[in-house]
Every structure is written in structure tokens, then in C-alpha cells.
Image (cartoon, rainbow, N blue to C red):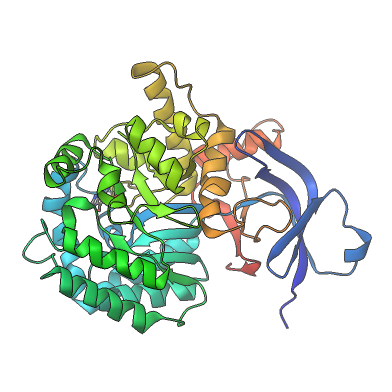
Length: 426
Ligand code: GUN
Ligand code: FE
């Protein structure tokens, strides 16, 4: 039988809040029934005899929570980076997503995605699929097998798509969503559904109303895009002349979430004061996607402000606006773009520290999934074991220095172990 109580011994680093990182060498983390009991300098007497995995001086850190990525776009990650958002959607993204009407293509592409995400630093994620029900269910089957915990959304889009990638009407889109929810209800341990109106330009009012009704019936969280690019924001303003800011275009239908069932909004690069106030009131989780915002020349989100205003904030790779599946890279990117913003845009918003960006990737985004993202007592035990022996250095380094180097320099080969909710993934 699988042990329900075990310990791992190594160099442990985790956030306790947005400002503080705890690092302990030769420490024991005890995990019981999928949750952390605590981190101890010696194994407490009451746990004597439990299995202990000694990982030497490798680092043990919380798993990474990717709040925003598109599984069907993984097939073109690292390609077609010379466009801005709206042109990129029409010329590259929509044609590629249309291929997922073909299940044999979906199987090939999603198998690669699922395996690569399994091997990555990500332990939990909130994922966009496409508008296709069958391919979305296939993605859910594949992700279930990885052992990672994910939310997956069948995308809704009934306007401003292409001939190949648009649902025929709001009624068809809502009907397919019900079919998808019914087919998958109770089927998975690791995968949950999330309502996914692509963004306001993709969804008619009739569709938004139908989705809001489904949201209330099934008590589902919502994910979408918000205030990513200035042309997009101007377009939403034209499409919704009754609203005074973009967020209202979701909120008027009840699709901006609530503190007990929050929404994830990706990007929030240009959110106004009023939009930020509403995000705070509704408990929105901001998915900050620095690499995507750079690749698509979207801009730089005022992340320090979101932290100071105590908004929920996590990081997203936004594959394939972002080109790297690595959440460790997302931490480094978040720090780098915050420095450019501070130097070039607004010197009142200081750059992010390593502590703050690490917190966003772990505890900040983790809160969307429950008690997730740290090794404090009773948090779900999601962990990575990181081996930095290949990153040779001529002198001994502190645990924090080693963590920083891994964030900037590591690749998936450094990840030698991974746990989700106490289950060993590899
Ligand atoms: N806005 C609407 N759809 C998308 C998408 O697929 N990626 C990004 N980055 N923004 C979007
Ligand atoms: Fe996106």
C-alpha cells in the first residue's frame, strides 16, 4: 500500500507571504494524507519509522501554479512572434485552433503538450482548450493521467472568429458547453471544468447571458482575458458602449467572479482605477503573463500596484503568446519586465523582488486551487525536487542564491522529482 505519511529530507525553500522566503538546509518535510505537516530541522519523534526520502542537498520547493495557458497553442510555441495580439489571433492562432476539429490531430498535439507539462515545473494549471467538445474531452483524459491538478475550459466563441473557428450561434455554443459538462461530470479526480468565454470580442451578449446561467447552475469558476492590448480595449469599448471599462463587459453578465467563486483574468496590462477596484471587490485572480506581453508587444502590467492593493495575483505562461512552458522562467520574466517598467514607464512602482515573483508563482496563484503553494502546515503537498549540480559554481552558495540561479538558469533536466497533493508524479 502507498504510504500516506512520509518525509523528504533536503534543502527546503518556500514563501510564507509575499515578502518572505524561508530556506532551511538539511530539513525534513513531513507529508500526511497529501498535506504538509511541517518542516523540521530533525524528524519529530512521533514520526519515527516513516519512510524518508533523502534527496541530499537538492532543493525542495513548492510546485508552480500556471494560471493561464492555451493547450492547443503549444504546437506553435516559439513561432510567429512578429505580430500584435489581434493580427496574431486571426492569422496564426485561430487557424491552428481550427485543426482541433480533427481528433487525430488533437491526439497527437495534446499528447505532446500533456507529457511536456508533466515534466515541467508546473503542478497545477488553468488551461484553455478550443471550442471543440470532443478534443477538449480528449485533453481532459490526457491531463487526468499526468496526475497534475488542472482546470480545463472548452472555449466559447460565437462572433469575430473565422469560418473554421466560430460556433454557429449562442444556442449552439451554450448547448455544446452543457454537453461537455454532462459528459465529463464526475469523471475525473484531477481535472475540473472552468467556463471559458474567450474574450468579449468573441462572445455575443446572448452567449454571455447563457454562460452566466450555466455558471449559476453548475457553480463554475470563469477564466478569460482582460485589458491585454490597447486595440483590443478600444474594440471592446465599441462593442459594449454601455460599459465604462472592459471589466464591466464581463461583470454586467455576472461573469467577473465573486470572492467565493473567483474568476481568473489574464493580463490586466491596462486596467484603469475603476477596473482595479472592481477586480478587488470581486476577488478576481490576475494572471500576469510577462513573456506573452513582451512577445505580442502588449505592454507591462503594473504588478507592484496589484500586490500593494492586495489583489489575488499569480503568474501565467500564456502558451503560445508566451514561448516557454517553464514557470521558473515566468518568475525571471516577471522580475525583468518590472525593472523595465520602473525605469521606462513609472518610477513610482519599484521592480519585483525574487521573493515577490516566487510568491506569485507559488502561493499567489496557488490560492486559486485552495490551500496550495507553500509548505506551511495543512497546505496540499505539491513539491519539486531540483538538482543544480549541473550548474557548476566554484564556491559554496546559500540556499537562496541556489534558488535564484535555478530560476534563471535551470531547464527541465534539473527537475528530478515532482509531487502533487502528496502523490509522486516522478
Ligand atoms: N485574447 C483572446 N484570445 C487570446 C489568446 O488566445 N491569447 C492571448 N494572449 N490573448 C487572447
Ligand atoms: Fe491567453
